[in-house]
Image 1 (cartoon, helix red, strand yellow):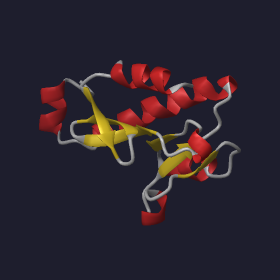
Image 2 (cartoon, rainbow, N blue to C red; image 1 turned 180 degrees about the horizontal axis):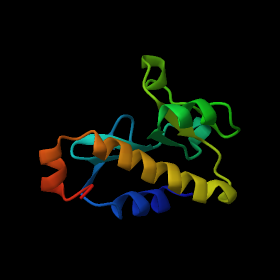
Image 3 (cartoon, rainbow, N blue to C red; image 1 turned 120 degrees about the horizontal axis):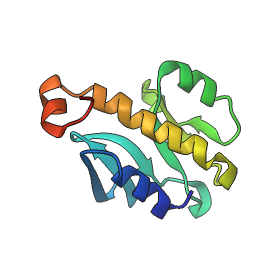
Amino acid sequence: MTYDEFNQLCRSMPATTYVVVQWNNAHVWKVGGKVFAIGGWGEKDKPAYVFKTSELNFDFLKEQEGYKPAPYFASRGMKWIQHFDTQAKTDEELRYYLKESYRIVSLGLTKRLQKELGVNQ
């Protein structure tokens, strides 16, 4: 997945906002002011993507090739994973986890904000 494809996917989700320059020129996507996905921070200028996961998915993904606990986030006990395998065969999997991250983060918003944003209706 390229950064353009990543940004297009995140843009397609309801009530998202894009922060153009934040955290070392990363592509940062938020819902309700809360981060749900980050494109950037790859080694040697290779694409990498960071997203929030459930505890179960975190435990599973941290052991899988092409994934690791996300720098900064995971070291603070948060369940965030970094995907750094840019092979096209993992794109569908990555799309699923990015959508799931959006869902998890949006469900953490207040019911009032969810209603205002029109998410999880």
